[in-house]
Amino acid sequence: MIAFRIQAIVDNCTRPAKEPLATEAGLSYWIEYGDKNLLFDTGHKEAIQKNLPLLNRKLNQIDGIILSHGHYDHTGGMTWVMEELNKDIPIYAKASVTDPVWSERITGMAYAGTDPEILAPIQKNLHAIESVEEIMPGFFLVPRASQRFPQPESSKFLFEGEEGHLLPDSFRNECFVVVQRPEGIVVLSGCSHQGIANIVDKAQTLFPNQPVVSVIGGFHLQGRKPDFKERPETIDAVARFLQRQVVGTIHTGHCTSVPGFERLQTILGDQVDYFYAGDVLEL
Image (cartoon, rainbow, N blue to C red):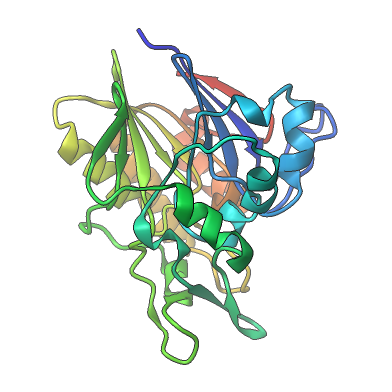
């Protein structure tokens, strides 16, 4: 069996007893899969730069980068990462990961995409994912979720296109990971703007005879505007879906938010936990 571990490098929260890890509104995971090391997203800004050495991780050990989508809180660390790396490595993402995207805030519309200064290095090393692709044995990148279930209500505040000609975000720049394990499949998502139910549903469609043994990532249940969060009954519906479809543990954080996690926990109990910066999963 191929060894599979994930460590949260960047998250909004860390455990109080942990080393003095930096926190920020962002997400980055270090994936060990067999003899390969992958960086899944890079957080928002400085946290990845501070936390990697504290967690005994060396950037030059990574063999590739996966960008789950193009929002700045997942790609912002790329500026430092690309400056520090002394080798070209593949960047797995949708071709549209560098397209402009926007977020409606209290103060108006704000650019929410990747720093323009890092677009060229990303495009130079981009390995575009436009169909389901097995990049390592049993390790798949999936370019699109299903559309059977509602997207998060908070996704309506997100847009794509050029300034002055914005459209509701289609999330065509979003992808997710499915990993086959002996017991079933593991689903790994960044922000789940398409809806974690749709992401899990797509994974089940692709691997119909394999149970979902774990779901990991952010579920986009809260954001920057006061009303940029899900209603309690909507979170409850997500929790019940996961309770029905996932036979193992759910590890969430980042845009799920602590209140969102606590609401999920009222239904899921010990089946769900918060995946804090510094935590490690053996899968």
